[in-house]
Length: 119
Image 1 (cartoon, rainbow, N blue to C red):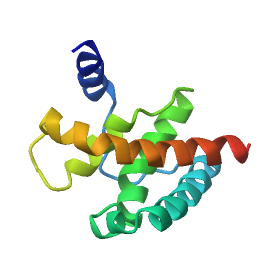
Image 2 (cartoon, rainbow, N blue to C red):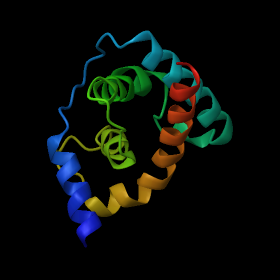
Image 3 (spheres, rainbow, N blue to C red):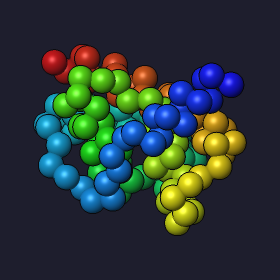
């Protein structure tokens, strides 16, 4: 239950944006490389709106913000951003996020590998 509380706290604290913002070249390049590998490994997710538009408008701004703060992004935050594409409500059920979190964790690990490898 404590882990669930921590994840809910994360969801409340991150500033959200729905517009693409200029990101550092390092973040952008790392994200695109990670995305390419992720989609090769999980092709059905591209059809599920984990596409380049989502990458550019939602994921990269979040990754850039995390990089500026010198923090790692938590997969639950990406899960929320993805789920919100299908639900206009600001609040997405935690159960839904927890089901999506493992796949987002795969993307985050790929990104972190690329981000660390490109420095």
